[in-house]
Length: 148
Image (cartoon, rainbow, N blue to C red):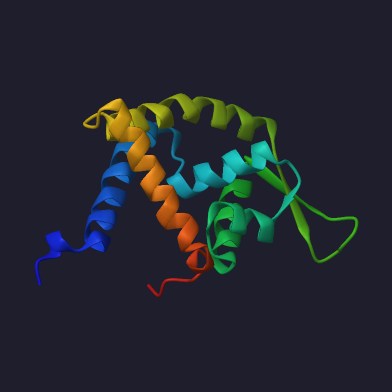
């Protein structure tokens, strides 16, 4: 089987490329792509609960807690008990979290631009459109844990 005929192989390679470009730009801030997605979502929706956060970024609920733990230990987010449900934790950004996000965003955008640079502007729009179709069509699979 020729791997170059498999879309999954290319998606994996694209993921490697986009993560490498992101890490090259953001390395000194020490924020992984998943941590960025979590922090951005928490800043967009302060007080979001962990389950909704996981669903929003397409990450499994079993693992997201440890990522939030790391962000909390760095002082970037804090968790509070929800008044309506003592079992639920609401996550909010700290001032340091907002400052970190402000420092990361321009670098993240630069990495995205570098990733898409080989495509002409109309191709970039088409690439994004096609990816969205595939993601939306497979929405039910987004929270499946991958065995490591």
